[in-house]
Length: 225
Image 1 (cartoon, rainbow, N blue to C red):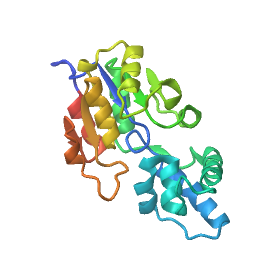
Image 2 (cartoon, rainbow, N blue to C red; image 1 turned 135 degrees about the vertical axis):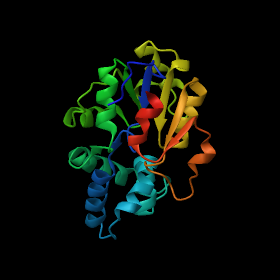
Image 3 (spheres, one colour; image 1 turned 60 degrees about the vertical axis):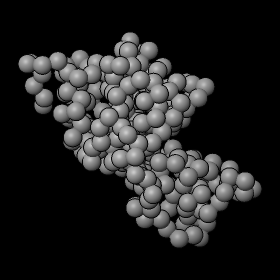
Image 4 (tube, one colour; image 1 turned 45 degrees about the vertical axis):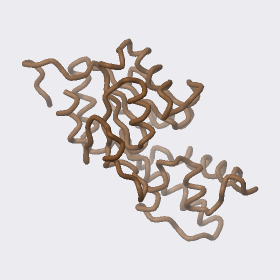
C-alpha cells in the first residue's frame, strides 16, 4: 500500500483501457477462437498468437486467425460466430493483471476515482465486470456505445472525466495501445503506456511518447500515487 500521509497524490482520477491494461482477457479469447477454428478444421492458435491479435479486436482476430479480410463474404458471419462464443466464455480465465487489484484497493482507500475507457462494446464489458468483481467500483465505464467517435479520438476520455467531475489536467490514462495514448494526449491527460499488454509484433511503445512507460502493472502505483 502507498502511504499518502505526507504528500498529495499526483492525480485526482485514473482511467484504464480494459483489454491488455486492466484485465488479461487473452485466455478467454484463445478459448473461443480455438473452438471456432476447430469447428472449421483449421489449425489452433497459440497464446502468443492471440496476444498479438486481441488488441485489434474481433476483426483483427478474424483477419489473423482465419485469414479473412473484411470484404470477404464469410468475414462478418465468422465474426458473429466468434463473438457468440466469446460471450459464453468471457469471464472463465480472464483476470486482472498482477498488481491491478492492489492498485484499485489503494485508490479506493484514498478516494481517488478510477474509470474504464474501452473500445470493447458495452454488452461484453458489463458482462465481464458483473462476473469478475474487482473489489472496487469504477466511477465511469465508457464504451463505443456511449460516444460518436472512439479512441484515438478523445471523446470517450473526456466523457469519462466529465462523469467523474475531474479536469483532464488532473487525470492520467493508462493503456497498452497507441490509440489509448493518443486519446489521452488529445484530451489533455497524462498518459502511461502499459507494455505488459497486447502489443503487435512491430509496435514500439517508446515511439508513442507517453508521459510514462511501464513493463508491469505493479509499477503503476508509484507513478500514480
